[in-house]
Length: 459
Ligand code: SF4
Image (cartoon, rainbow, N blue to C red; front, side, top):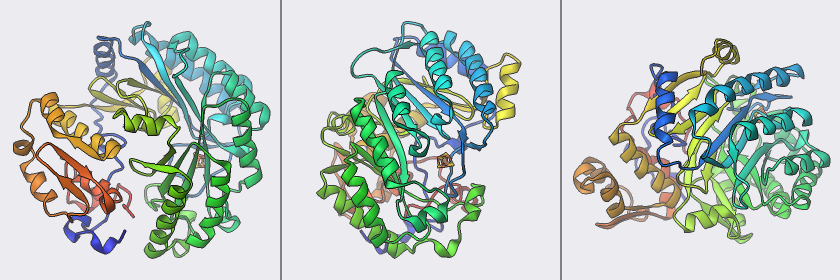
């Protein structure tokens, strides 16, 4: 991998690209998308009775990690969780009746913030409310996952989560180096993390995932080797390795990170190369972008079966579900729309106090959006595009429709992608710059540096 290889016209001024957890990306959601639009989308989605996916956002955290770009509220107020639960219940009472009760929820994810900020009793109550309002699957292949801050959970907490029905956990780690931890204000020991992983195994969680970040202050390839050794010894089923995007003008806590402490491009490249080699040697397969999984894990099997999909939490093993977002700032994907709740707690509470859905903005996708979303998601998930299938699904002539985009693809290094009449396949260094390749198909991408500055650097 070598950034010198990236054609200057492709890298542009800012070297940035969306992460494409949605297409079009969230900055293009529109404020004139209303609760009424969402209601209609939910009703349309009931035709066919596809399974449902639920995402519940719990925004609270005990302390602030300086690198954080999540929508969170740092507070010690224990009442905050109690009040929030009352509003989640109000939202459930408004949202659940929009969906056919027969539709089965096959995926459930609690994210944050820190979902385990809630007390044991509050988490039990929330699961009860979800089961009361929705038809939660009891099938063995249902995926019920929760993000865990290992600093906030003990053995009993893990037993409770399993008892509530969760079968997958994802643990934030980022880096075990003490200096790096100090620089980002997140002190978390190897022992505490390993205890949570061991408890997850003991209580029969099906998959354990660990999140790491590279590009943090004071990180070096050498220091990160230690973190990687410890993490590989814990043998998680999945790993994600995200690039830290330093955007202090957008994410205020990042102002506490000293720019001079950030690793150079060369150091990050070395760290990434070493990490990828170590993960391959330990039996992990690269899945799409930033994710790794053992061959025994569902994510790998979904990719092999062509079922892998991308969503706001990363990658998902189930292709055809409508995603309902619950809680402040959550985003849903229902029928041919995206819908986002109010991002600020007072506005979220006010809408629910008024008996209204807390919809802040959203987007009705046009046929061109749906087509380009398929192209981008297939490339990001499967690294290939089946042109014949796409043409049939969208009733287009691919070469004709994407004449301009294909002319740009032809200028990419030939060891990045293979282009045949019926397929596109990305390989080699092309995998590392896949966001740039997807960007070529993004009709919303603009040359305006202010627009580009909203997105993170590719490396
Ligand atoms: S990284 Fe996670 S735990 Fe840390 S502040 Fe952000 S949401 Fe909270």
